[in-house]
Length: 404
Image (cartoon, rainbow, N blue to C red; front, side, top):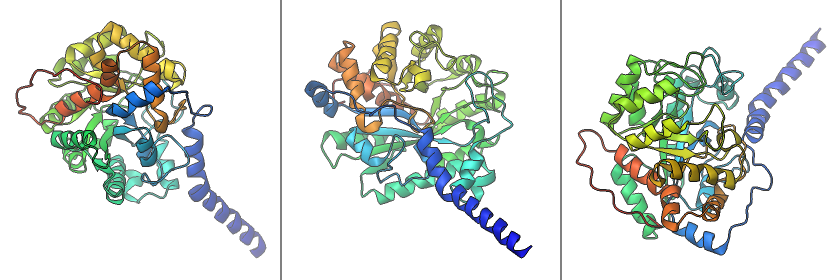
């Protein structure tokens, strides 16, 4: 009997060792893959242009995973060394706190959660095991630690002044700092209390995606069961965010939620990561009418790099979607939204994002148009969104050029 107990104890110990040390990084590696070599031909002209650009990516989920953000991860898509290699100026980093079991693009319940298992397996603080809000606050804490350990190479952006200083320093060649802006993917992490918005803001969050893969108490998801519009709590949240200087993100939102937000928003709204039905007709993507409404609001869409967004994880597929938006509503309404480290397979990581610059050249865009897509549009909209109400008068938009 005692021998059997020893065997059972040994099996439990081995299982625990695997669960806490082997499985989390293995799941990360299998979830966030790169198809093929991840390297694409980039001409001398494209490489030279890319080094002049302000590159901004509106969405990555890298904080979800147990990694040292300042060091080469050896897996996934984003870390500080690869952002430096890709000449990225600003990376929006989102906090994912809950995803449904059997996640799909059509219909998901809000009653299950995959992230809890990951939270426990990664040995996160106990407070994050049961609280969605604490999961977001932990992600913010991780980024603050990375900023402190980066030796000035990483800066968290909290205000318009921070953004202006970051971009000015980069243009001036001051150690080429990289900015990071904290976002939330699904406002269910507020746990139904508007007062928790203050806690997120205090932790540095400046963008919130209202919903993720299921309907929540803020609004309906395009992947939810009922796909309703903004709730009264959602209306309150949008107003409170704009008053604070926080950017509203309607990625994943149901058609009704998108329409409701665009009807009441007084600032440009973003779709941080996604695609368009005009080049990739999946449930994930926006219709032409939604794109026109987004343009009327003055907002923008970040085009993704994965198959459900652009129907092939290639730079050319992303460029086709960007070209479609430009031809339909204008070049000023489109940018980059990779969804890196969001349990997607990409054709390249952020170190090789110059492949997008090459694909845009191949698609016939001018250098000034490429500058707008690669980051100029995002810089303008983020800068406007970070100004709390009451806002100063919006000045006429200056023409954008490569490097601005």
